[in-house]
Amino acid sequence: MKTMSFQASLAAAVMLTAAWLASPVSAQAQTPPSAAAQQAAQPPAAGPAPAAAPSATAPAAPTATAPATPSVIAAPAPAKSETGSVAPAMKELSPWVMFMSADVIVKAVMIGLAFASLMTWTVFIAKSIELSVASTKLRSALKKIADTRSLAEAQMALGAKEGILPSFLAAALREARMSAGLSSDSGIKERAASSFAEIVRAEARRIRIGMGVLATIGSTSPFVGLFGTVWGIMNSFIGISKSQTTNLAVVAPGIAEALLATAIGLVAAIPAVIIYNHFSRVTKGYLELVSRASGAAARLLSRDLDRSHGSVHSRAAE
Image 1 (cartoon, rainbow, N blue to C red):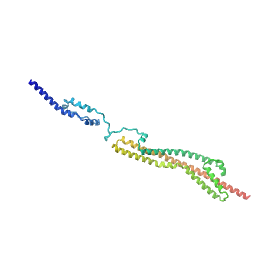
Image 2 (image 1 turned 90 degrees about the horizontal axis):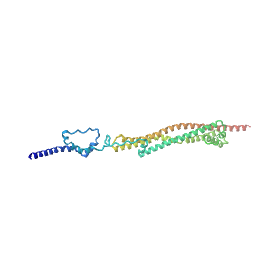
Image 3 (image 1 turned 135 degrees about the vertical axis):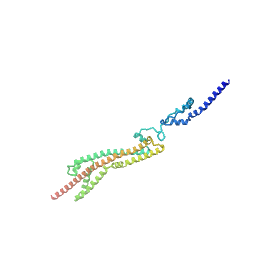
Image 4 (image 1 turned 180 degrees about the vertical axis):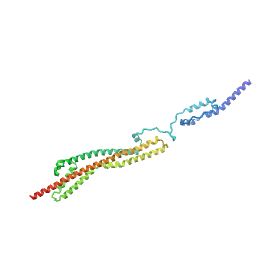
């Protein structure tokens, strides 16, 4: 009986000793929730933790792994950038998306430049048609009066059509009629030449309508687009400072939206400069035709004056 009680006491002492030895191991194996979350959020590149000593974990393996199992199974943490912030999802960078995502001022700049480009092509189409029609009519009129001998005959050849050459002929006839009875042919020719010069200047002003718009668009559009770019990049840097990240996915959209304003400015400016230079050459050629028409009207007036004086002399001789 004493032997059995001694054995029971010895077994109880062994169990208490084993429980006392296993309690520090189980306390170390249990991880608080915050530490478990930090371990789950660590990147997978980190190596596994070193295993505990076999002597310490062997008797307490069932007890230590049971409470630690729920803490190891955690939701995957979102990917982080190098600086520690969550990387945003990449969005499609098309011109329309960049325009819709741009600042209000950058949008206003883009809309203004698009309107300027529309004006450029409108002026190009309108002036091309106008110069082509005017040059064709003037060349046809010059051919019709090439063989005429007087102002009246030239007017009959042209008919009642409106144009620059009929204007010259009407001015010459009006001056000859108003100077009837004067013996100075040089004075009549001088006054007629003054009238012709006024008509040429008026025609030059009319034919150059729209050229100033092209010159303004061609010279100012790059600077307007640059203003939009500077404003957009300034807003991008402000956004970078607020997000406290230099990740390219965060920086690229704002800078792309800003550079779109410069691209639209160049799209508006380059055609405007080319079209302006083209119309400068075409307008110069048309004004040369106008000068030819002025000379043709002046020659017809001179013939009429000489013919009238010749008829007066012949009557005096009779």
